[in-house]
Image (cartoon, rainbow, N blue to C red):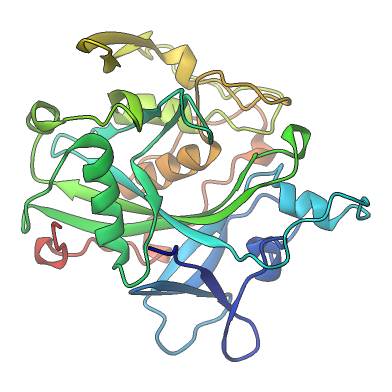
Length: 327
């Protein structure tokens, strides 16, 4: 099925966004890092965004882009002959699920090294939303396709966390962008513990190669490593050196001792496939920590750490269990 496109309410009616333009920029984002509050209509088959309230808006969410966003950079540079971006494409909508267990851990996956886009990247389960698909259903479908987890109806609640403007390649130094998405991060809170969920996981080896669960302390350390800065964040001294993960091998699954230093890597200047947590995932982990009433540890480079407004300023009240289809 075709992918859902993102639309903006700029002149009184929803309009599709050109692939080549930064969504954050069109919505009035300044030169800084953000975060910007955006009004959203989260309806079946489409996402409409506006910097102002509008009839049908169902949420007010934080929107952010990385400081090295290639679309923002291209808007500030003279056009180079032969380097034009597509004019007949729009901006696609993606959805990613921050799955929280009842004992407050969240699931990440390492994308398979054979994937052509973002191999070896640590991200939550997620992917494209299909036409006529509810956004939650799209997230739960991606969760099931990647991890094998089916969440029974009535045994979870959920809340939209925020929006991230994503490009691939993520930096101009890696080449002109070929993909442009707005990623909607959904927090899905299961009534099952990490151990119960882990026992039911059946990973798809064509999609993922490893799965760890992160505690709030480790997630806070990961979220504090600001991509696009030259200095890492100040990390707590009692941070564990590793976390236990499950790695997929040709003959099955095996325990993986995942060094936390791997999760703390920042995005390199030039393209490479080293394992790291995606910049958008770090943004989502910050929002999750705010939902828990926590914030990441302070960074040495304070100019790049903007935890954003308190939780109550966003539309982040969890929806009751019966709001999830569980499909």
